[in-house]
Image 1 (cartoon, helix red, strand yellow):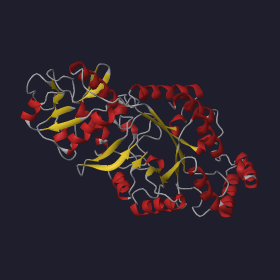
Image 2 (cartoon, one colour; image 1 turned 180 degrees about the vertical axis):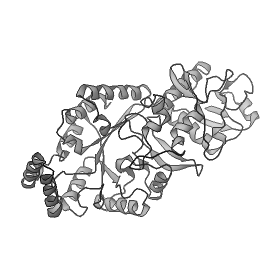
Image 3 (cartoon, one colour; image 1 turned 90 degrees about the vertical axis):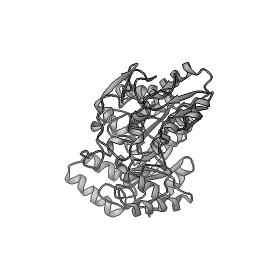
Image 4 (cartoon, helix red, strand yellow; image 1 turned 90 degrees about the horizontal axis):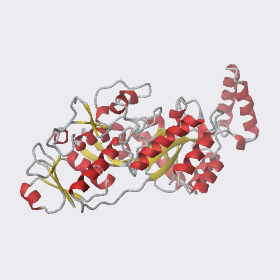
Length: 431
């Protein structure tokens, strides 16, 4: 067991120690603020304070884990053997920066508590992030730091026991529009037809009329292909269905449509189905609970996982709402139009609420890829190269590679075959 000595054990300190040592590195860890207990300990140990006690493994602490609330921190970037880092620690420290404070800053999304200009959907822009500005958004630096720390600890303590984590792939399918034309009712179909005509979208008019007579040909109806593909590669996929009333940004099938209900139930026979919370439920706890209950009633089982429409996350209020709605897992931690690691980790972690100074009981599953981020790319090879690069980053740290694709994209006519891209990804990176 690894023992960490510090002058004060705070909720922040406990949160980040458990995440790095237990959940990322698989090391049993305990803490103490008593010098005598630290000195008596004969196994591996670290001092995390301003000054070392003796000649032990020492990491000089920044003040961040012992503060409360939010401060406008001045971040100066450094380098640790080719990996970006910050919160430098000085020459006496066994590593050149405070890995624990830096990890806390990134995992908690500390910068999203600070004043910033949100985008048109109320989201934190990726271009405002420390990771984007310093070109490490596509590297899970918290995981990289942790493994480099493990190497240093093993050099000092060869008998240090740890359980190595295994690479894991998770495919998420977002279903916010289950069909493009079918099952939308007479009124919406006629309105859509006239809109297409007035916009001179004659190809879409032809497709719409064709689907009205042959609903199985709806371009978004990719479910049989998805089920067969997942079976082929032994993938257990997570489907997130939107189950909400129609609105400006929520245009799925009516929740009272029997064919839509049948689709959800049939998918749940093969895969786990959870809730893609509507745009309208953002900041509306009662509506969020209502959508969760409605989907749960269809499935006849609890719905514990969530995704937010358009990846809308307002920290910390969004996660407080998810906790109050009794979700246990969330898959919204990432950016829609940029690939990479929003929280600089590929490993799941619990959400830490800085304003309340408490770890909330919801596990955050960060994703590395949202399919919309690929729309600005020019060809299939460019997309495949980017997927390969991200996979290599995650596999190198024994992390969790989570990708978000929508049934809509698989039905779009494009110079890029998104079905081919998806199958390429599954065939190469699912294990």
